[in-house]
Length: 149
Image (cartoon, rainbow, N blue to C red):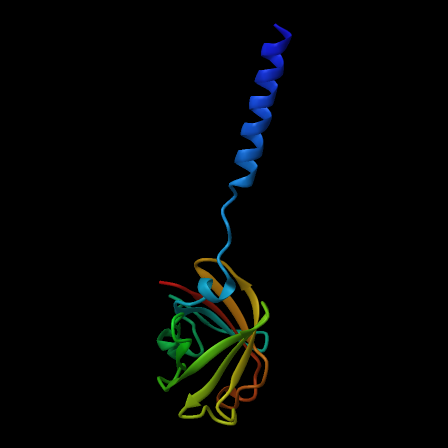
């Protein structure tokens, strides 16, 4: 009888260890953000200027904003609120910085490179904040809450 309890306890322990060891692995950040993103909301400095579906947007052009990051080639297409599109390549600097570089044509005052801090990320939402002021938006630091449609 004692042997049966010992065997049962060992089986339960083994099952618990197997279950704990089978946790879902999180994909690398570069794979998780390699998607087509659209603007859900945008802030210029601390002022919200666009919310998807909002009727009082001060910059309604953000409905055209797109950030498409391709995994295989690290290609990027970046479309601003005024409809201007830029193409280039993207890379990550650690887990907290997204860099768009070799952009053509060059965004105003950028030298062909835009850098963003990654505020948060999950499978359907990416929040990034531009590290330098945008000349197009009156030298504001812009924060983009993006979603994957």
